[in-house]
Length: 163
Length: 186
Image (cartoon, rainbow over all chains, first blue to last red; front, top):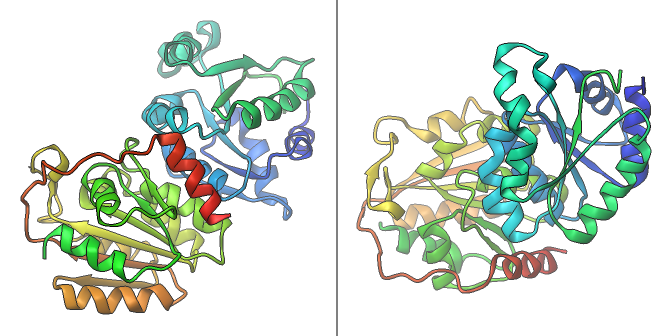
């Protein structure tokens, strides 16, 4: 298992400098780590779309933002992603926890768990999955992708990869 | 006061301040009144003006950032008020043009005829909150809040509910709006 502290450090080292979002148990420790660090800003958002909005403003003011959320939050921010980020070409990296993966979760996570990746395919948002071996590579590649393509990008994070 | 007068009054008092214009009539009217590179015109993502403005304000602390939106916009993202209040950006001025309807879609009622939005801004820890109903009051309060250096909220009561069907869309593309805006605030 990858430590949340190291994961946070890799995000910062790759160039991301503004963090916001809404929690999930999978990224709970990561958010606490970002909150506790005095050298970075993590803004607790009231909803995932508000997080994407704040991140978009931060981008226009010169930052390279990350939004952290559970896949349930993708539904909340779909309109912002499609009618703001995609059409204005406002990039941000979304680290989205994948609850309900392969149907092994509580009932409230099952529908989004089997559709969240297809939902992104439908609206045209690129996504990749973290696994135990690709964390650093994916984070570095993501920075290049969001800054060059200037589009939102989703990296899915399943249970059991960071602790 | 109708919202065209309100937007004209506000625009005339600006120099290089940053303005996040909400989608719908507000962006169209602001664009038609005076197209400025420091205006970010939203065409979608209703409700997000307040969040986008917060994101800009936090990262451009030396620039005054104005959120210009309607009652319908704010009600759709009312959580943005305590979010801003918790962070207290001193350079953020939130102006809400309240006509109690969704004017862009033909005047369907919102709920601001019974819910006083400025009364929500106070416990959300906006440092300066005022409600204005006349053009003179608006002018005075905009002059004051442009220079007051504290998180501020102006509720502007709009009388005229007449929708302005003839007004055109913003002619810049979304990408042009963004590029120009980013250069202007850099």
